[in-house]
Picture 1 (spheres, helix red, strand yellow):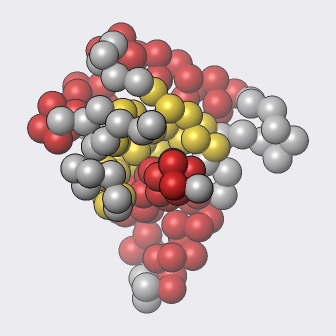
Picture 2: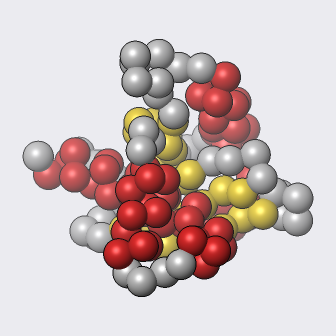
Length: 140
């Protein structure tokens, strides 16, 4: 049984996309992009968790096509450990983020967005894909 509402996180060294479910966990929607040079991501995510009464953190983890984890996955896990230290009461769920950015780009293109318009929102849309994958897995 999943705990809602949930926060989806698309981790990157420079930017972190954030998405959230509605309070009952039916839909995922974009929240914001955290620019790591300007904002401490752990503090900002902690604020969002408190504001939205988040019950679960869903983090995308890059799994290689052969099923193994590489250095990018190690960075995600290290970030997740920092999150767990700051928010020890929240479960962290990892979702394979394979192709989420590609899917996000395709959806933005289909919505009429030009490639240069992607950058400000691509991480949020990828976070929505991560969270949607998790939601879908709960209803299948």
